[in-house]
Structure formats: C-alpha cells, structure tokens
Length: 343
Image 1 (cartoon, rainbow, N blue to C red):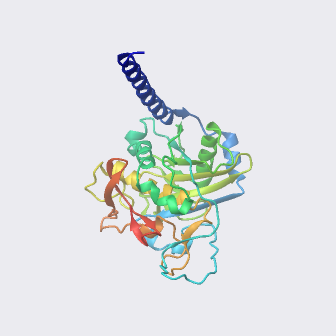
Image 2: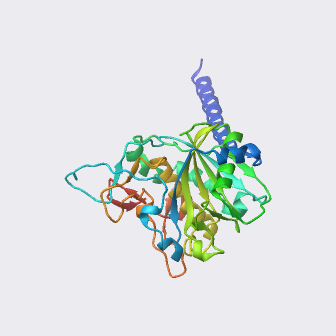
Image 3: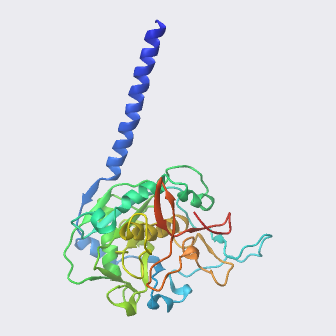
C-alpha cells in the first residue's frame, strides 16, 4: 500500500472514530434527557404508608422559624458518636467516618412534580447543572470521603414527570414518599445505593413533615423552617431508596442574593441541590461522614458546616465559582484536607 493510501486510510479511520465519539456523547445526553410520564396511584400511597424507616435531614432556611430548631433536631435519625482520642493536628470541625455506606457512584433521577411547562420554566433546568457538576472539579471534593478519584461518577439518568391535581397546596411526608415510590417503580429502581431520586416541587406548593410544624412554607412564615432535605426510605416492596426534596427555591429564606450569574431561579435551585447531593453522597443513611468532635458542628454534614450566612432579606450570600465550565452561585462544601469550606 502506498504512503498516500495509508495516510488517506488513517484520515478516514480517525474521522469515523471522531464521529462515533460525538454520536455516542450525543446519545448519552439524549438518554439522560429522557423524561418518562407516570402518576401516583393507590399502590404508591399504600407503599408509603408502610415504610419501615424514613430518615431525613433538613437544610434550614434563613428564617426565624429555622433559628428555633436546635442543630440536634435537623434530622430524625439519632447520631451515634465514635469514641476516640483526638489525633495530632486535630481539627474539631473535620468530618468523621462512622462506618456507614457512601456512594462511590450513583445516577441522578429527577422527578418533576406538577409542572406542565417543564423543568426549565419551573426550576431553571437542574439536570443541566447536575451534568456540569458530574464533569467538574467541585464534585471531586467527595473523593476522600468515598475512596475513589474516578471521573464522571454521578451522571444524570432518565427523569420522571408527574402532573397531578392537588387538593391543597401542602404536601405531607406520606405524599412525598408516594411520589418517590411512583418514580422508583417507573424507573425500575429497587433496594439501591446507585440512584438518587430528586423530587422538585413547583412554586406555590408547600411541604411539611407529618404531625410537626417543620415546613417549607414561604406563605406561612411561623412554620417556614427548611429549604430542602435528603432522605433514605425503606419500602416493603422495593426496599431502600435514596431521595432529596427541593421545593421552589427562589423565595426569601432560600434564594441566593443578587446579582447571580444565571439568575435567581437557576442559582438558588443549583445551590440547594448541590448541598443535598454532596450530603447524600457522603452520608446517605446518616451513619457515614459527619462532624463528631466539635460542640458547635456536632452532627453536621459536609454541606451543613458550610451553610452560607444570609442578609437582612433572608437571601444566602453564596460564593460564585466555575462548575463544569460555567459560573454558578453556590454554597461551599467542607474539606477535611483543607480543614475548611472550599470548592
């Protein structure tokens, strides 16, 4: 074969290979963008009512109601300390490994509840943020806690849309679990540490923990105590499911302060979502990484320690930094390596 033919063949092969890579990437993006439709039915409500354990931990809002909740009551699973003498170079806020499971890798599955206009209109396209987070240096802050430095560990998988008429604007915990169950069944997720189901609630919908006054309720400030939370539920039929709940964030008490690079809706949603993602990865069942040696930070997770301060208007003073090639205004996360909050 002549040199000319060899070079031509090599050029054709490399061109074909490049096109194949581009098509594969495009297919991956199309698959991650797939949105399935489902409803919440009787079997989902029955499954929610028989959950054996439902652990959760809230991200407090910048409100008077949140300040009344002691740090020890932000979650409902009792923390168990690990007795140990401080080591040389002791930093009291550092996270301590309590031996529970962590997520070395997991797929994000987003659930869009009652928003026919679509996720971009209602929440600023959180899937796009998670896709950037998956390719970023920021997500590698979890490396020391989960024991791997691999890239692209937390991709975005298929999402679910649930459009359902509500009888009231307040959703209780049982209804949240019904939504989680319906989405998990639709996605064929069972007994999993490989998926995180993110439930997004639209503007105007409140949610409270049953038999409590601990709520996301911008329209009723006396009970407005949290912006979001992450949880682990044990269903009798489909087993262990990890989930987060993100109500509408662009409200005083949860929103980021202006100006923000992508607008208040996008960055407010992304900031609280990243908080819950990092905590689900490093402490999914609330028995893995949390601060154990500080009276101030005791019980706090990777995001809790770095929760931003707020201004007079109840807006969070987050930092602006690059995530996956794009500027976002987000809260920082705690690093045992640097013994402080960073990105």
